[in-house]
Image 1 (cartoon, rainbow, N blue to C red):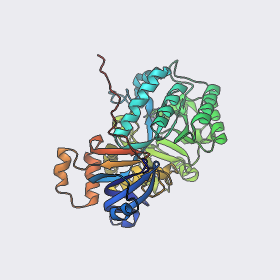
Image 2: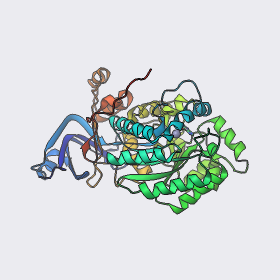
Image 3: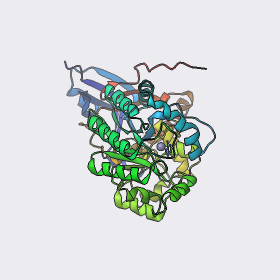
Image 4: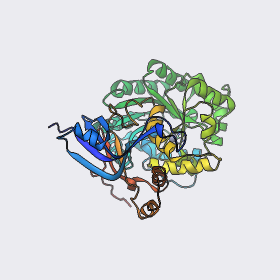
Length: 442
Ligand code: GUN
Ligand code: ZN
């Protein structure tokens, strides 16, 4: 008997395409009594229980009925050094960065602090059902080292990079064009493709990088087309105005990144709220991807992301928490706020499209749909087990639910980590393992 083999039984939902509406049943597979056969961290078979169990006679079964098994959630924009910044009061972007975030990120010069925070960070992601994240580390290589080492220890598919920032930030939080390039290059060599780790070249945003640094980031992008690229774009009006002052020769905000050679289909642009027609045309041409960060955009009062407008131009939007400006690690809560932001603009987010978005949709945005985001045979066995009756409020509402779509909508509107009954990372249970403890210092 192979100990890496495991059979999960439960209700199963996985997507093959983005559902256009509730009637679009060809976009997904749903098995009322389904099973997933896992071997060596990979999904070997998925389908009706009777059919899959017949191929796996001696394999131990974990019965998750009546819960719902889905691919693990994917968070495409989150800040690892902001686990102690989340829920900081009263400011919009630039004051929030200077008043809270930069202060906190300076602590990541200490490798011990990085290692401790990395354990908490991955505990939190797992507890919330997130099995892949695209993360910003701090400017310090130690933070990226801790991020990748802890992810590797847990065999999680994680994407991240040290931020490059060489101006408009305090002492101790600045690199230089040369050191940012050298340190990023060394981290790519060490961690990209090491286990399930992948590197994202990460100039923080236009305000904290000189033109020289953005050029060096562009050189890295050209030398490492296998890597992702991530930054922030047009989140806040004051940010946009300051960027225009700092880069008087650029046509607009996106033009700053464009001139530095950063735009590729592997580029993720956090926020992308206040865009000009030219910027939207450039996104369409280059395939760079906006990342919608609903809880963050509401928390910092940044603005309303125009999902339908961008989609209408053939652009693929990712969705993310953006913790620590985001206010929840939960991709369910993120969907809840996304729904409301679209409501304010007369746009609709159907729950089937919503759950596609945080699984296969984000995987497609990352070009990883052959590895994660679905439960097809051959995929990596990252799986979330959802309980739509996890709380009293959810259980009561579920008594009136008549369809899968209604159950999904209850999960996204009322759910959070309490609705995550279990999570499997590369085939191993990861929620039930005890998290690192936090002592309270007063
Ligand atoms: N723009 C540049 N850095 C950040 C950050 O850490 N959070 C958010 N929300 N926006 C940013
Ligand atoms: Zn961010």
